[in-house]
Image 1 (cartoon, rainbow, N blue to C red):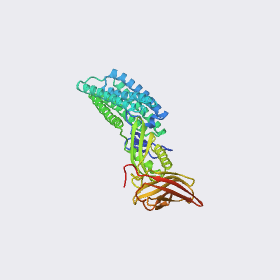
Image 2: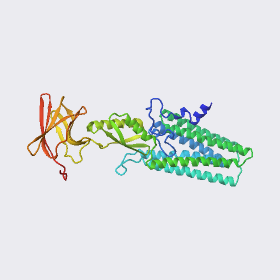
Image 3: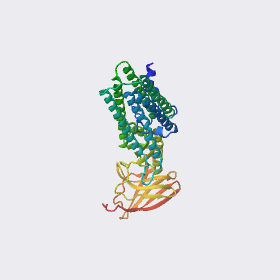
Image 4: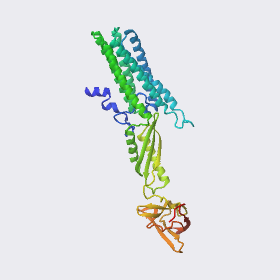
Length: 443
C-alpha cells in the first residue's frame, strides 16, 4: 500500500524511469535530484519529439477547460479558495502559449544578425511565464486576505465541491498523459511535470476541504485554504524564477560536466580533459571541451579522436546541439619556443615533419612520420662552418616508429645547412634542407 502511494506521488522506482529500456543508460545530463525542468523551461526531450509537443498541447487544452468550468462556479459561489485554484490552473495552462511561440521562433535558422539562432527567446518566454505566475499569486493572495478580513458568504457548496473534484480530475488526467508520454519518449522532465500536475490536483482537493469546513460552520475555512494555495503558487514562482535565471546566466545542471567527463573516459587517446564548459541556448546544449592528447600523434588521428568524443557526448547528452573540441598545447615535449621552423618531409620512403623540440632531457631533433617504409632508419648530417659534419642518428622514441628522435641535442647555433638521410632495406634517399634561427634570437 505504501509503495503504491509513493509511486503515485513519484517517489517510487516507477517515478524516475526517465531512461527506459533501450536507453543509453548514462543519464541525460540532469542532476538526479532535479530533473532540470520547471515552469518556463522547455526540455529537449519534450520539445524535440512530436509526442512531447502533443503532450504540451493537450495539457493546455485540458487545463484550460478545467479552469473555465471552475471560473463559472467561482462567479456563482464567491469562493476565494476556488478562485485561487482556478488562477493556479489558468497560470499552468497559459504558460504553454509563450513556450510554444518561443519554440516556433527557436526553430528558425541562424542569420547574419542572430548567428546562434533565436534559442534565447525561450529564456524570454520563461521570464514572461514567471511574471504570469507571480501575478496570479498576488491576485490570489489579495483576494484571500480580503475575504479573511471581510468575510463573505460562500454559496452553492455542492457546486463548489464538484468544481474542486473537476479541478483534481483535470490535473490528474494531465498527470497521467505527461507521465505515460514521458516514459514512452524517455523524458525525465515530462515525467516530473506529470507528478507536478498530480500535486496541483491536491490543491483542488483542498478546495473541497474548505467547502466542507464552510458547510460545518467554519466560514473562514475558505479564505484560509485560498491563502494556502497562494503559498503553493509563490513556491512555484520561486522555483521557476531560479531555473529560468540560472539558464539566462549560462548556468547548467551539475551533472552535465560529470557526463562530459564520463563521455571522454570512453574515448581512447584522450589523456585528460583540460577544460569543459556548457551552456543552454533555448532547449539546446552547447559544449566546449579542451582535451590533452599525446603530442606525438598526427592531426588526422587527433581529428578522429575529436569525432569519437563528439559521438560519445551526443550519446551522453541527448540535448547536445554543438560540441566544440579544442586541443590543449603540450605541457612538455613540444615544439621549442625559439626553434627554427619545422621542415616538411615528403619523399618515397616517408612523409612527416622534422623539427627541434624541447624534451625533459633538453633539446632534441625529432622526425614525426605519418607514412614510412618498412624498416625506416634516419639520420641528419649537419654541415658546420668549421668544415666538420655533425651526425645525429634518429632512433624510434619509446618503440614508436612514427617518432624518430636524436639521443643528443644539436649543437648551437641552430642555423645550418643539412641533409636528412633515409634508408629502408636496399632503398635510400637524401633530403637537403636548412634551418635558421627565428628573428631576434641569437646565441
